[in-house]
Image (cartoon, rainbow, N blue to C red; front, top):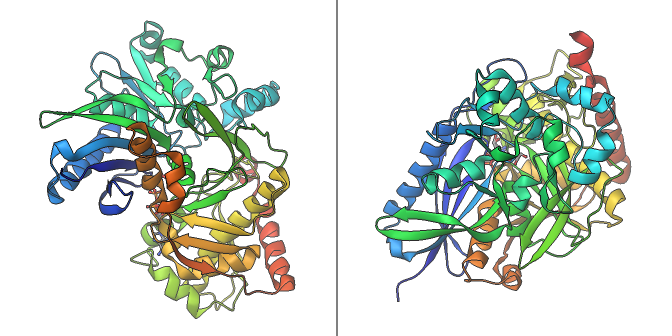
Length: 497
Ligand SMILES: Nc1ncnc2c1ncn2[C@@H]1O[C@H](COP(=O)(O)OP(=O)(O)O)[C@@H](O)[C@H]1O
Ligand SMILES: O=P(O)(O)OC[C@H](O)CO
């Protein structure tokens, strides 16, 4: 019998990937394609849904062709995606009514501020686990219906559909037959009741979102639809938002286990088991996954700008040609700690939740050079992570002894060592840093009956452990200065507009 494979589609903020796994769960090959980022106004971020689909479809087909796989060998597809990003499309033509509004987009901040003033914060947190913020999908859908000509009328007549990126991809893969999502993606919309596992009618009404627009919500390992390819029916059997997929891919399936993913943003999640825990320290509660008839919850700290700050050094400031260059630049000046970068380009997420904070560089002197800026930008990923780690330990009562990491930026050894130094907790980097795709593949494999949850642990391999090497006094001194820098960026956009 010929080898069977699982393909994970990993639709990230900056690129679409297709990743091939064999039936032992080993990563065989990756295809990747970047796509266009649109910044039409300060604080606005958009993607073209058709380009998302085209790049995702192209990498999928390229992967199959280049690896010389037969359609009959593909046991299942799994999907993982940038979360919250909002697409609204016409039910009949399948055409999006506008570009996707990306999770980083801040255009709906004022709607959120009004809701807070009207006292909705506790209700929203209680039912959805979230804080009221422009980050989540609900106000983005509301904005689209209120600002695209004719959209509201059409939506009320049942002619429009809303979906996060996973829903959009399934809709395209199944040629408009399925309008579905999974628990993890639904839990990022701000209109999904994470206890009752159903859309919250009152919240949907609050945001003026007709129920007819909403996708059917399924567990993360389930039957989502069929992709017809070369005469074969390939089932889509796993879906999870990328951060939940990474938690699963790192085999954090026991309560108290945590991971941090360093991609465009940085997201730390801790599995809290079947217990739903609301945060007192600025974290959010989210669904980790739903499989085998059960739902696991997670505490999450969401950092909006991490690897994106490195991209800004490359594409915005043009200080570097490649993100990997930051490692050598930082090593050259690693004993200098005077410059701080607070990359609050999209406000600040957890634990601050300030939609009006904006980025800043502190401590510039005449001798500040590219190395200092590059180093301070990398450091900001580590400082933001420590902010979250502290909140997470307080909320969960779990003292983490090590932090599992993954995502594109963990290739940077300087960053990993500074992360361990500044938090005083060791950092564990796996061989496969594509945990997101791995998680989606595991879910699809479970959904297709190939694996069981218990098999995951065996599939994990460690590459390197970074141990803290900084003394406690220096650690605290550096961190205090970071906290001061953050304070000075807060509320900037509101105060200056
Ligand atoms: N060696 C490196 N050092 C620092 N940052 C890096 C390095 N390699 C990649 N990155 C950053 O990591 C991000 C890419 O990670 P990835 O997991 O692919 O992100 P996403 O899934 O959000 O698109 C980019 O923002 C990039 O700037
Ligand atoms: O595309 P990533 O990997 O930065 O992840 C984006 C998150 O899902 C946003 O919540």
